[in-house]
Length: 342
Image 1 (cartoon, one colour):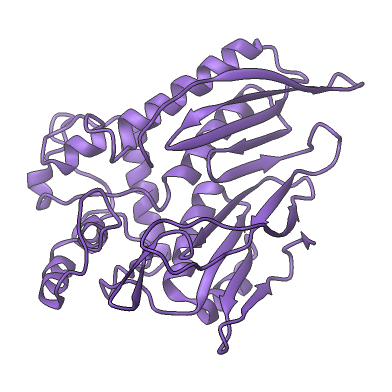
Image 2 (image 1 turned 60 degrees about the vertical axis):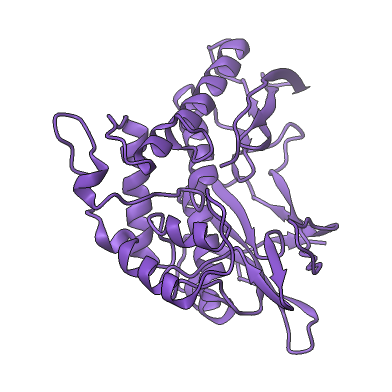
């Protein structure tokens, strides 16, 4: 979750017969652009109120969970300051703990010091020594924390927990989509697409068809800076069902030192950046965008073969996996229910 700026705008997207009236709320938040499209049919709240409420929710998420906002509850907790956690902070922690258990430790939001040490967290770092990694592994991680955070007269005291540091980056954007979606469902919205870097969608788009999302094509350029993608692999269609859509990949963030690439996906169990041929994982989850976000990270930690096993065994998930074969050529694997069109 990057530096937060919110600049909301409200647009009429499309109108058609039958009472459908789509609007779009968009702006800048969490380090990038966001867009929320929804059908106002049957909704009695004015569009301007919805815009302002989405704005307020995004600000609340930032002041609670952002590791880049130095006065957020998370940043103050990570600095060792006793805080009075709000409901969102406690809910996020509980969700992160459950995903840690579900993933067998592959998604660990209390492994922040390991990400910092490799230069992919909230602090500067690069190429830590093996001895430093071993010390960090023994002193961080969800395994050292309780399933529920203990409060003392409403206060959470980091020192009572061994002063852990938390980093919710693996789940925060997807979870933010779920928060916005829950608000819209509460208003009676049935057709929506919430895009805050990750996506939640349900129902139909303004043209009456299912929502469609372009899937990135990974491009692995050997460089010292963050890289982007070039073009699309294809278009995924929701079919009208509610689901979260998240892509995670090592092709966007890495650095190269002494001829070796260090990916931003850190295995919390080993303490080291992953070394495998899985380039990206796009995950569809009927449970929520937060779950899809966490699972995409999980797959990027465990690699191609384990990811294929996991998605094939879970009826709530579908996945599109891009990997490099033995000759370095880009290949793809698509689960049975993932509808991808060229």
